[in-house]
Image (cartoon, rainbow, N blue to C red; front, side):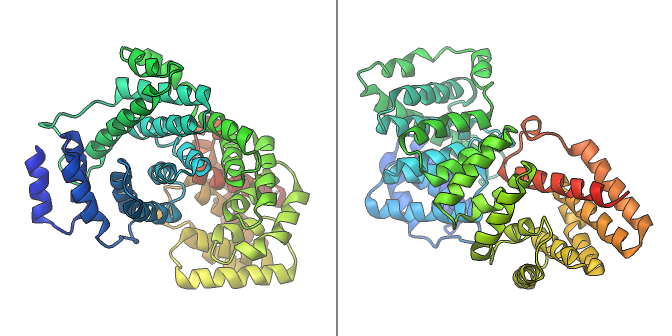
Length: 455
C-alpha cells in the first residue's frame, strides 16, 4: 500500500476512525505534518467510541504522538482516559495514558502509567520502545539525568534492533486496514525523533546516546532486556518515589510489580501504604485483600475489609469476592450479597459477578445456590482463565462436600488440582500481568481452604 491507498480508504469509509489513524501514521511516515494535523483535527471532532476502549486508545495515541494545542490535547487526553478506565491493565492503554500525562506535564502519573505498560505477559517491541523513550523524556524533564539516559538507551536499543522503519511503498499492510502494526511502528519512530531532539539539548553528553547505539547486536539487546518487566517497573518507580515518597499510585504500582516478582512482603508494605494514603483506591484494595492473606496477615486483611470495602465495593465484584475470602459476620455477608445481586442483575454473564455471588452464598451456607453460581463462573466461555476456573472448582468442591455430595466434590477437587498441575506456577516464573496475578492469588487461597476443609 502507498499513501494514496490510505487516503482512498478514508474516502470510501469516512466514518472509520481506524482508517483515519492509519492515514495519520502514513502522513507522519511521509513527512507531511501539515496534513497529519488536519486529519487529527477531523478525528478529534468525531464522536468518542466509548464502547470500544481499544479504539479510544488507538485514536488517542495517534493524536498524542505529536504535540498539539491545548484544546486538541484535552480532547486526546479524554480519549486516553476513557480507554484506561475501561481497560486499566491493558498495556497499550497504559502506555497511551502515560503519553497523555506526559503531554499534560504531569510527570509522576506519566511514569506510573508508562511503567505499567511494560507487560511481562504481552511483549511488544514497539510499545516497550515507546514506553522507554517517554520514560526517558519524562526523567529528563525532572532533571534526573542518569535515569533519563538509561531509559533513552534502552528505548534506542530496542528501536535499532527490533523495530524496523517502514518504507512508504511498504506501509506494513497485513491484509486489513485495522492492523495497528504499521501505525505503531511509525509512532515508535516519531517518539524516537522527539526523544533525540530533547536529549540533543543536554550538554552533559546525552546526545551521544542517540548516536552511539546504532550498531548494537541483538545479543546486546537480549542482555539489556534480561531485566524482567517487573524489575524495570520497580527501577522506574523507585526513581520517582525517591522524589515523591508519598505518591499513592506509584506505591500501588510498585507493590504490584513486587508481587509479579514474587516478593509478597514488599508488595504488601507498598499496598498498605498506598491504601493508607488513599483509602478510596479501589485498585489497591482489590489486590490488597488477597495479598495480605497470601502473606499470612489476617489482621491487616480484616482491618482493610472492615474499613475500606464498604466504601468502594458497590460496583466491583472483585472487591466483594476478596472481602469474603474469609468468613465474616452475617450482617457483612448480607451487605456483600446485596451488592453482588445488583451486579448480577446488571450483567449475569460476567464471570467475576458469578464468582463473587457464588462465594458469598457459600459463606452464607447456601451451598446449592453457591454451586449454581460457581458453575456459571466456570462456564465454557471462561476456560481461557485457568486461575479463575480452578478457584471456582475448589469452592465448588467444598460446597458439594458440605451438601453431602462427596462424589461431585471429589471430581471438582481433582479437576482443580489437575488444572494447577498443568497451568500454575509462581508469579515470577509465569510472568503474570496484574489481572492474572489477582486470579493467581485468589486461586492459592481457594486451594488452601479446600485442602483444610476436605479430607
